[in-house]
Image (cartoon, rainbow over all chains, first blue to last red):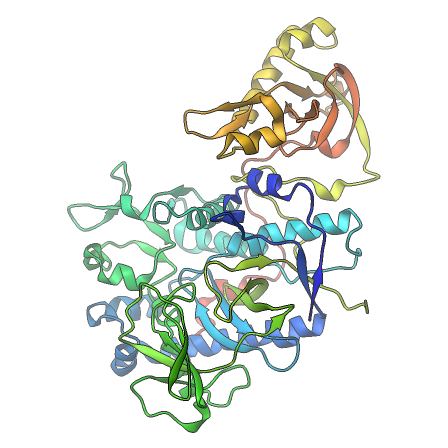
Length: 393
Length: 174
């Protein structure tokens, strides 16, 4: 694994804008960064990323199956008791899921360490699945990268396949509504990309803002034309929907949700200590504990404190010998936290590098790489493309 | 290969046909600024010139690159940018490219392509593929991939093997 400086394509910004990638820069800073790329060997991708991703995903599914039958675990996951049946039934009914992103710390040697599972509302999908792919195609085509250069990226292709199955098995000719909150260009871009893939899968895919969703007299969710919403893809976290006033209609609505309610278990950092309880010593897991539980010495004297629910690095702090040394402020409640052994992401040329490994259906489908100037990857991070090349440089 | 062989977008834009690259076969095409110029040239009937223009214009409305700022649009398309009621800036359609009579007779025709003017004054497609000088009109020769019809919606794409586990959700959790 190496970081290689590259010449950005002259027209990349124009191309990004003409292809729906409006959030290529944020607040004046570049987000899509093709001034460098990461190079992996095939065995690094297949043995160190792809295989552990599928294995951890299977471990997570086992954990879901255990959690829905355990009130103690549901309680530890901070899922409101009033929604336990919804979560349990969505699992027992085998409601389909589409995608998720696991974050790993990996430097090219040794086992990749699992940080967390963005199993409910992952972003950076478009740039991982499409724009990164397009970058490599053009770099190879213009001779800037050798023709044998490859990339671990079947994300869009596999996403369309799971959407085809969703139509076949669940949707039929019913429309799928796709939804994000107002005033977030990045979320809107991600949802529109999802809608693009759904259209390619032959689905009647319609957009509605989360805020515009209504509820009918008999508790069904409705669109702006008062049509009921048979299926809803929402880029909006379950922990919010549970708490909000419309949350009480979740069960009676009859709406099929994507991601399904059982994903609330996996997008929750309580899975980290629960996985460590079940699979202690697994090479890809870091020792993790509930803050309130008895800790074993394997946690070490340096650890990271994470709220159960947080996104984009918010409210994460680093402790060393009992003192807080780094903290990212944020809006999330910090009453319920987990502690994870301190295992910083590696640095390449002073950049802190995090690997996002995509799970589509139940398969590892590709990766995306983000860099940040600090050890905690935040929403200010940059996205860099990657290549697979086995030839010696 | 660990990556997909080909991908496209149906909604967000027209994917550049990068794979056609160098050495791609070329073919004839006609370019005109508008339907009356097309009719005057006499290679196609006036009715065909008009219907093809209308079709190109519809494609334009659907696939034109949209910019948030006039400056960004002007960087690419010079002074031909206009503001839409949505607040977006788009280049004005400045011409169209269409199939020749021979291609139509042979059933080899392609959907008309809206053309714009680059900041250098060349005819370009919406995804900025250079077509020819603006001063040119009538028959030109272009790489074949530049005349590919921009797609808007497609149906199923499958490839053997993948997704079977997703179909049989029963394999989980046991």
